[in-house]
Image 1: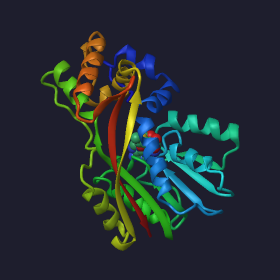
Image 2: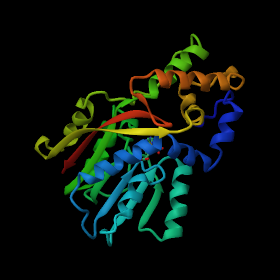
Image 3: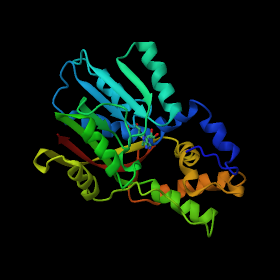
Length: 282
Ligand SMILES: C[S@@+](CC[C@H](N)C(=O)[O-])C[C@H]1O[C@@H](n2cnc3c(N)ncnc32)[C@H](O)[C@@H]1O
């Protein structure tokens, strides 16, 4: 992610400037979150007309776009919210161009402006763990804003093949500097179920599943460079990161290839990621 660190390498700005950030996300981790979103939408009954849907922590509207790409949908309203204005702008641009029924707004998942019992569907694709109290605060808002009988979909990473390599590159290039990675991996399904139960979703109205998706590339070096630009700042950029950029990218490639979740398929390298998803009815 782009940080305001004085040590952020010039390569980061060059790769992620303005709307390029959205393209980089979509060419790397975004391809996987999109597969999860498509899978999770397939778990729901057809979305009826007049539905009011929340695409929570929407990024550039991955969930909204998938919903609208289904040709059986008519007369619905989507509210897409996120805190990253660059992503929201990318979505807003397409909303205007295509006259999509999406209202885009900059809102934190922990304090939404929507009234109680408002949405028929509330979907948060790979975002609930960013809210405080280990997701509880985000889950509370999902429950509050959902109509009785409405459906919530939340998910979290179980495993991400390319994340441990980031820590390894950090340790090699920034020795002695602690790695402050966000606790974004909820390895078992307990935490995501716990927060949904705690806010009021009954267990008997809850379906829990695991599924996997693959990031695929025929140019791993390019993929790794973009990913390093996007996520290398998690450990905190240091002064030498700019001059050691190539070294970092090469090391990232090496460690990705060493991971159990990586495989070669023809000319491509495939990297596995898996999710836990909870579909719950209020
Ligand atoms: C992994 S991305 C997923 C984006 C999108 N849902 C998708 O499927 O591609 C996580 C998103 O959560 C957003 N986010 C992080 N913290 C947030 C918060 N506190 N409130 C709202 N959105 C947040 C980020 O800006 C980012 O767009």
